[in-house]
Image (cartoon, rainbow, N blue to C red; front, side):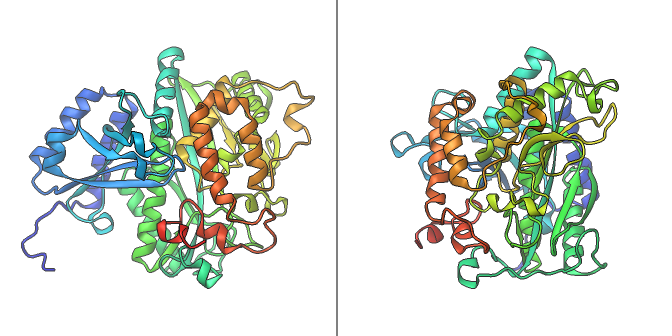
Length: 476
């Protein structure tokens, strides 16, 4: 169709970066919600080139959902946005289906028109139940409440940065057709740090990095990873909710850019056997009044007693929370010890097979790195379980806890058994959300063989929560 009569908003990447960094600073400085609401509504009202506002939220498993609201409608009705929760897997039953979306005006993004379309802006929503509270199945709201409580009670700011690996495969929707083709085709054979300028992987990484920069990610470095066609694009620390939002945006950007290039960005933890899988190493720290509470130049590995207590509690509950960090059948292929798999429930400064690593740091960068996280896990669930466990969990009386011979499960069935039997999960998530999540994972697991074997089975891709739709789910 002709675009001759359309004049929707299209901003340069420099303008986008400036706007998004300003919004990021407002969020970091905890500008009051009512102030941001007034500012954003005025901007939407006064800017004629905006046609729609895309509101994003995530379901219990971490799939990102998007609704486009006409700008004029949203400006009038932002406080009464309802939707059918029974249509979202893991949300309400049909008999109690009505839920509302509230707008988190702090999580507002301007997007490149050549990637997301002209005349649109993005904002994250919060799922609200009929009592006006954050809905228990919306882990973004649960995480946000927990972070707010920690700040108000202890003055803690919870910080996170995630190193998200993925694969770039030839063809659009390569995952959705895997049950027919039985293979993924690499677009690059270069390997770690090696990709010639202009080859498909390098062009994909460059384009994705440009979009992230424009959206205020504050990039740090990007490079091909160890396996062929594997990539990692790193960006700066953020407060915990913003960090989780950025994970969702990172994967959305990667998928959209790849599709536009005729390829597929995949975040399956182990889509190809025989090469390294993809992880989402999760770096966390806690600050108070600008001071990094995990740093202690005289402490063991130069981290504080608070940091070691945090580590000990995660090690104690490692098997309890494994299903939250490794959320799919395919994720347990990655916990294969032959490929630097972080499947040992211990902590180390050097051993990359440890669940937790203590990276070299200083007063600014001292942190704890949880390595046993798959890139397909719900990021809000991951960061909530890590911080909630590290701050309020128990410490087991296990001899030499930090180096004991203990291992994470090598299949989702064992992880499910541990999860269902864990009292800590009841305390952390509540029995209702716990059971709903377990039932979703059981449904996917039951469509796959218990023993993974040596090849990736079509079912573990077809029924993966990031991949399946109603059509695929019905082909069983």
